[in-house]
Length: 271
Image 1 (tube, one colour):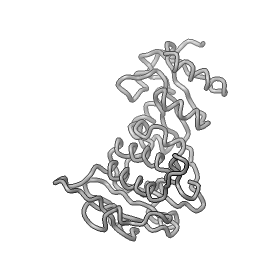
Image 2 (image 1 turned 45 degrees about the horizontal axis):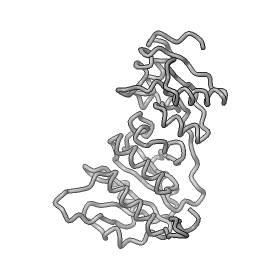
Image 3 (image 1 turned 90 degrees about the horizontal axis):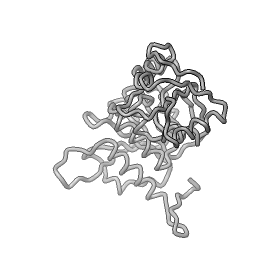
């Protein structure tokens, strides 16, 4: 093991800090930071290799084993002191392990049958939770036009719990959306308007549109929608949290397309 870096002003540490804090830096570098043992285990399972692996010398056994697994694949860790790691970290209780990964553009299927379009989801925790839920629901891809939080921001990455490694994320211009949707009917989630979501027929290929809690989807997104649905709320609440609404609607699609086969849940069409 080489001597660890001792200065937070080291250019490599400054670069990591910039990637943690600046959407512009992430765009220009086409890279983002993944922090913590569990997320780095998910990245390894997805066969993704980091540009930089930052680690402290004293690691718990699980983290040390993870470093060795990366080293076995040709990744040389950059050892730092706890003080330097704290300067690079975005968390209050760092686990002593983080990495810089290139943004991996996972391709959309040629003919997707289950897409999620988001507009105005600005809270990083909500966006990350939605991405995690979309992966669990088997969504083919998430479309994130301008107006959403940066999907590669640290809080989004942590909340998404590995979705970035397996779920196609597309950040298109608005004018590119019709081609990406490819004629799929687009169901707009409203607070009170449209038909109850359980009455919609999601068995055929479709896309869902979820907007921000404050204003909902903007005019450009609404213009793309073909039908509105709502989640009935017998209580006096004005609306649901965007991540909660997304989960309800995404898993209604799963429910309608699925069946129990031999005691196991199977989604029709081999999904």
